[in-house]
Picture (cartoon, rainbow, N blue to C red):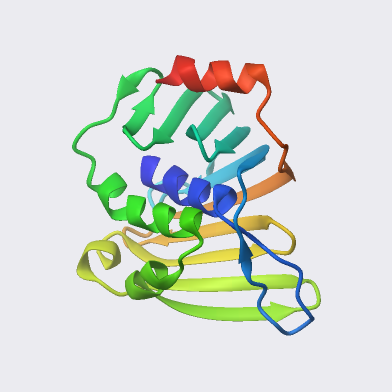
Length: 194
């Protein structure tokens, strides 16, 4: 579950696509901040119905990523240059974070070369937006992921992660904005989650 959240944060808080002509894949533009809402549906092979969670997220180039789950259970996850924290406790020894962190760093920097080194990337663009299909290349990622689908227009709107264990996570993003700076409540939430 945490690895899924990391990928979603990568997509949401990384560079946003610039406007391009229909049929062309937009170039990425570095963003200093992003805030918005999410709905996450995780379908596990052993369950009939998906697990659904809702919440808010925030990214600040100077602070890192904040993932606030509000429903069904409140939880806070922070990913920054010093590590990963959930509800104020450091998360140590998670292989998923080690596999995903370089992906996040690639998108945050705007340097997609590492992304293309770790994933086979298929780009699609149309009048309604763009789509990236990411297929893991190495054993480490391929052991955890079958593929990732990212769809968007001016910002990412949907992320689908199909895992090797048969699980599928779909995230929809709404109300994504890029304020000049985060408000005080979000800054405090970063501090409380660390």
